[in-house]
Length: 291
Image 1: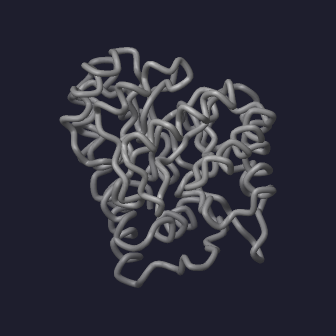
Image 2 (image 1 turned 120 degrees about the vertical axis):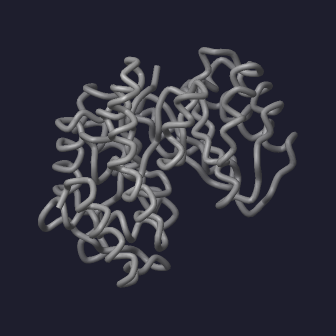
């Protein structure tokens, strides 16, 4: 269903407004470079600072520009179940193929609350759901056992796992079934994640290096481990550099280096990356052969 390199797209802004023209060109470039799917309005897309109207527009523009050439997994997360329902309704109306739904943050529900959250969303929408587990941002963590329960809901089809625990891939295969879609949420762990049985990555790095990261996934998934390892070594400094300051500051800076004129504007409380972070990005781009 979903596999390979799936960039969590940045949202370009100019003068505090959604830069639709740049975004359409960016989506076109991503598809031309071989990305296997797209995620608009994820964390990297600064979804937390988008109005509901902007979020719906960004998703709709992404779907329109992609024109069914690759699947669109729309970021729909919130710490309010009712708000996620509205986001999912808008995403479904726009023609998205699935919803990426982060665990409720700040509220810190227990495991029963997590199950109830996704169960209610599944009842309210026919849109397939990809659970997004990122304890470093949400504090809340879905256990493999709870995910196994959720996997019994037909529309809960996969997980973006940014827990950092590679052993969970095997645990999820046992509890959720081998057809349950497992996507890494950590670029630097993508090789190990695929080796454990994952099928792809929802990626920050793929914003900047879509061809290389798509080639990495194509190589690994086709059994060419030597090529995958070579590309892993080439991309690894970039995986690390893009998180040397608060994301998406470094990745927007990196994009301005590989796509001339790409806007680096961020919405508060995000601020531009430090000089040290920019130097790390510059060095990583050079190592990857992108600058």
